[in-house]
Length: 479
Image (tube, rainbow, N blue to C red):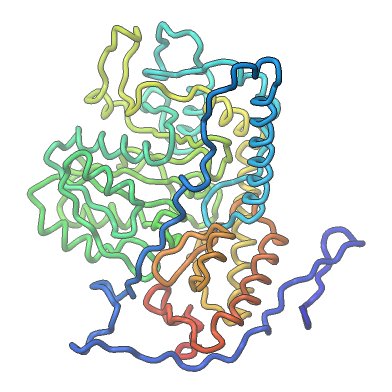
């Protein structure tokens, strides 16, 4: 690209082409469109422009069919050759998709080759992780070791907590909210409008009354609106979902202020035996302890449960998560199961016994210091991306303590799918994970700037001030 800046890398003999922030076409002022009633056209009740959701392709058009082997296939080997070819092409596509992955909070930088020797075993941790069952091919000794590690991280004694390795972050939310519902059967679930969709799924599944709380422009819960809604329902206990998930306020990467939420509850007259707080820490629940000035997640505070995803910041080849709650709460869910010769208080029956081993392996290899270094790397690279987007004239927002960079949604859906960006309305985001390097960000930035110059030759880019604030918007009205 003409005029691009060459930046020296760590190797003295290597240079890389950085993106050129000046390669931006002049933009005319966007028109202000009003409806017949004087309100902005295409704007919902929250002031955001509404747009049709773009769904992905129908996988039936590209699925790999299951076919019966020919009668003589045992001798010809045609079926084996066919399957080997399918798997080889699939592996090639995985390499390409991993190379262009930016929008979802998955750490793709891991190597579990040492654990390949265990893939021949059907490891199942069905039932309570702390009580063995009659099924002997399990990994409870790894699972409890992982749970103890997280218990130390969140400051709760071994004898005071109960938890298990879940199949995903959503299961952690389902379990945490279920515990809250069992503690307070007539409680009302409060969650910010931008909470993860699994929170509202839980409300539907458990037939719970759910109150959606407004959010600030940053995406975090608006405690003034929270206070008003608490006071309107003061006669019932409160079950609160707190987002500690840099993607959790789904797109903007905000983190709810746990201490302010607790102060709001107490200020409204709720005693500590009148509310239950579940902390959805899917990504940032593991990052926060290693970020200076970040609010502390601790069971020394009046919280009921915390869940995180294991396949996000830690990095794991299969979805998994960690859910921890107080021992005193889980008894309402737990029951003896003679078939297992164990107890059970989990959501699922069978549970992946390989996942705890993968988590145990990484926690041992990296430790607290290793995770601290990776968190700092993510935050540095996120600031780099935000600064370079703004230098190119593209509106961008990065919440404090977050590694999620929010910016103007690319106009071309093929570009969105190429980089696997998560989008909502007029905004998209990149989640900077340990596997996202500066070099990868530069490739993305170069492609974005180049394509953007053609997308808006005849019309201006959309104004995203309503989504990320006027101070972060770079449209012609707000430059």
